[in-house]
Length: 442
Length: 157
Image 1 (tube, rainbow over the protein chains, first blue to last red):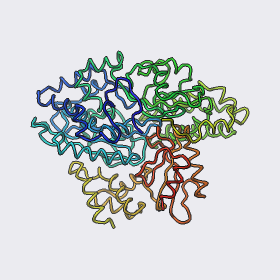
Image 2: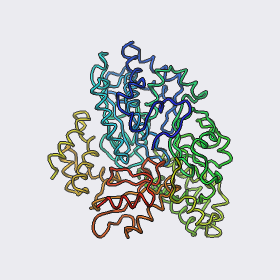
Image 3: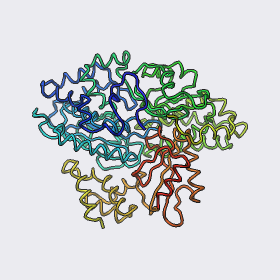
Image 4: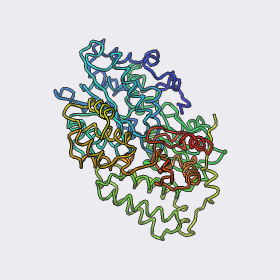
């Protein structure tokens, strides 16, 4: 795969698949000039944080929290160890953008992390990479070696006196490690179970030291912000939604893949870039921000622009920018059943409402799907979700509940039909034809 | 029981962390032990724990928590097929069924000749390439339509 299309790209500008990921290629594209400028011009930490604040870069991992604000929470004058950590544990179903960033533009992440470390006074960083994308982990290690050899990592960077060591850490199959405190536990060599907050990582993070965790794409955007200036970066998107963003489109489109577009671009444009709907079929629903975000019915989705505010107004979340497109051949009960199974599998088991509740959600949706649904099952599902939400240490419980609530809300008739008639509104052969083996068009 | 080559690789991992945080290397060390042995026996887990100076039960907790560790022997090749929603919409379920028919085994089973173990995996972070599968936790295979699956099976001998 590659990044298949772009409008006014930054992150994907000048990339050439597997042929242009090395340090020399990155430098040719202007890479490491932002870090060099900061160090050679002896810029201050405040300058960097202010530029990031002005850019209104919002966290690209899912929560959309303003990055500059997050950085300002770090006690940068605190004398002891501090860490910056990159969250590349990309396991949210539908999301595959960080894989392409690390694969085709790994040095942008390294430079972004070095700049972040400078701004927050950290001397050490880790990039936690999803275990399933092993080839990407190996590539990132190679990129780190290149950066060390060229003096962009290590001690006394470019003669500035600033030290920064960066290492890669791999996951090994646990969705929950995408949660930032579970990720820290995992780096510490433990089960990836989220920590109770507060204290937040900015005061008690990795090894108990102040730590800032950002998503891969967030770090990768930093050099572009410093080079362009915060305001210009903001202008590349729309108000309160700075910059461009990578969107991962999967499901029933002709060209699934990654697309970089300015925030605020209409969904219809993005859908068109992805080749439109398969077989000219109708858009039934869309999960706009990864499997944890509420589903949006087709007509409402066609009215959205792709930015945090518009998707939020439509009752969902931009999340990680993972757009799962479902056409009219999709059985929404089956789709939800698969997602519910995922959360049941991936609950870390620490909090009872989530551990038991995700099991309930899966079993009840499963019995509806397999023709054993009971008349009060939809009420039961609703009750289970409200008993999970807000009662757990981390957001996995909410993430498991939101799809259930939104699928039932928007496709209530389909669930009711399943329960009453013990079968699907969409004939099984139609479902299979719609979701069978598929070859993307070039 | 860990070979000197494995220990050398583990040492490289330990060096990534502060000197008093050797336990941080446990995930990588267990992965290295599994690579050497094909799966993770209790002895291997204990060996890793001792090498890192941590309690064996703490290493065992890690090995049981993350699902890419195999605590029982698997075939020479472990094929994990993603059937999560985005893959499901583009043939992920069909790919799993095709493999089951072709190999004559179900998920979590191994072919009688010990060659292939089939697993149903969770999101691998490559949904745009659906259907996707991973061979032995290392190699991501994209766009696995019947023809590509056949080719892969010919290759895995």
